[in-house]
Image 1 (tube, rainbow over the protein chains, first blue to last red):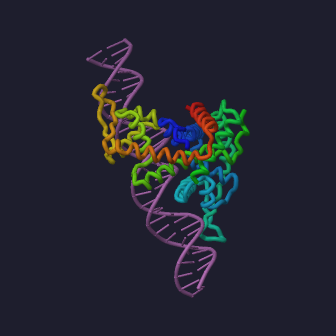
Image 2: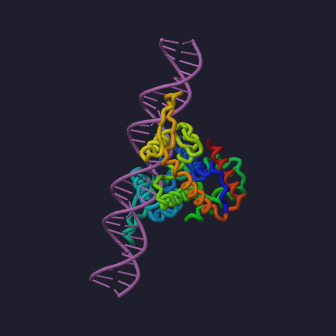
Image 3: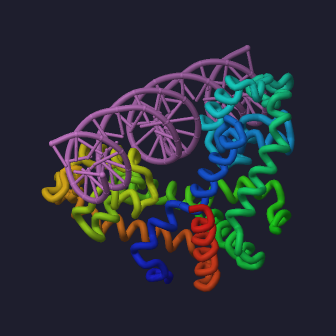
Length: 146
Length: 146
DNA sequence: AACATATAGTTGTTTATGCAACTATACAAA
DNA sequence: TTTGTATAGTTGCATAAACAACTATATGTT
């Protein structure tokens, strides 16, 4: 029984994920400061495509832990910004394959640099071993509920 | 230098806070299953008021790591649900003090039980020491960026 | 072929967040 | 008193998430 593990006051703090929102907000600010006008959520989709271009919306759902409507709308917005293009699959006409445009390809190195710098700032003073522990705990929490 | 601490693929996963969103989603589901029709965000405000009733919107901002517009709208929605009431402060007419209604007071014990049970499920198999480490790391990340 | 079922994606609705611009009150200094 | 400034809260706008209901295509069974 873990019943008194959290004092009542800490409960929401843990649920709210204030650390991850703080990183996201900071990263957003750093993008803006560099003149890059995309949201963190859009960037998270581009990140997946930089790893492997031409993935289906379904694959993007799984890779970014979002549901299908969320991906539909993120892809909508990315298409409006001319950063991706939907291409219907020839094998299976239900599927849209999402491809990066040249504009999006040009964003990779700069945004990844900013993201890495932001993360380094966030993790300043955190030792490697504790970080590994934290990642393991968070993964376990996720697995317990998934 | 922490430059290669994260493999590229893990970067977004850490930023996205999938563990906290998984807990939030589960808690939301458990509320719904118990017939409690409030959102996690609304519940987070009520939690603060259960600890101390009659706080200002500004105090709720600080306690829940939200900005002022977010609190304005959450209080709007809670008022529509007859769970809180705005009462202008007599000392300082800029301030709204937020008070729980009887209906909201009646929600405390049941929702806190559900929240604790959900958290226990989320933390199953996580030992106390690792949890403390994770909390310390997340706090440090927050402090580094705040 | 016909039917059922599963899968991929879209649309509508509600709620919430982030940011900028705004109003109103309080307070402090000249 | 006037002027400036800080603080509390609200409003408008864009983006995103969760959920349910929907369309269209694919697949498997009889």
